[in-house]
Amino acid sequence: MFSNNNNCLSTRTANYNTSDLDPYLSHLAGQVYPPDTQCQYIQGAGSALYRVNIHACRL
Image 1: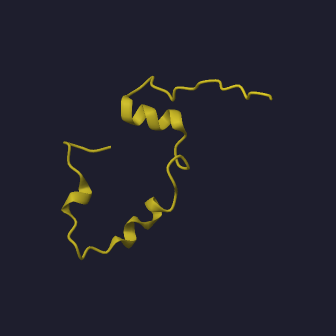
Image 2 (image 1 turned 45 degrees about the vertical axis):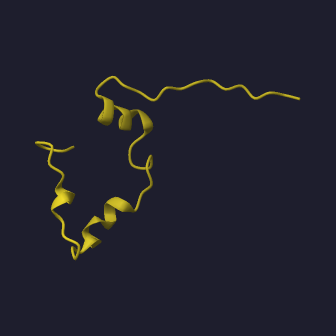
């Protein structure tokens, strides 16, 4: 995560070559870490995605 609340991208200038970021931008959200892991990174250990069972209605 971030150390000392510093964002390494905030120091980039407008003419910065972003090609070194391409490996990190090639995946969509959820393709690198499963939902529970993403929750733990954001909310802390022990957190998880809230799951609700939805039953399909039959007509």
